[in-house]
Image 1 (cartoon, rainbow, N blue to C red):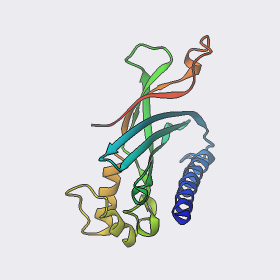
Image 2 (tube, rainbow, N blue to C red):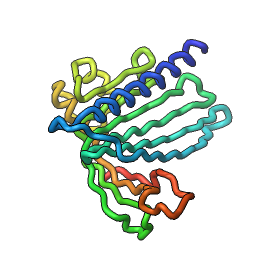
Image 3 (cartoon, rainbow, N blue to C red):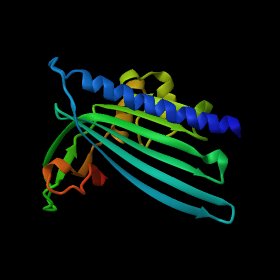
Length: 208
């Protein structure tokens, strides 16, 4: 049991390191060599409790973290932490997508809100731990794709996804996990006279 707890701790550490590495790389410079900065960070959390039969109790924490940059790029981290009485089934999945975005004043009319369109991702990193994962954890990275990732992707691929070659599997992976999102955020700087505001995600939905 201690070993499984350690595996989960290591998984969270790996996921945190991936986010930090992505953020550091994006903050360094833009495509034209000019320094770029993070302009906002927004988060959203949901909690679920599920019961199956008389012996299995599940808790699920879903977290989304959106970081926007001065060159109109984004990093979105979506994680799902599953834990409960079925110890063998516990695990964490985390998806980091990178791409470009556009934003407009929100259709809901709130002056502190923006509607942000996250375009389809150009890069995707997916990490999972738990029963399905080899040795407790595996990572799929569209920027460093290889044959082993193709084999691991087959474990989680959408029905009908093409995995006939490494390139086909990579493209299917990016399409499955990097399809883009529609997000409404609250940006306190848009309403400075209201001290109760904080940077947060109001709503987030996968693009249709």
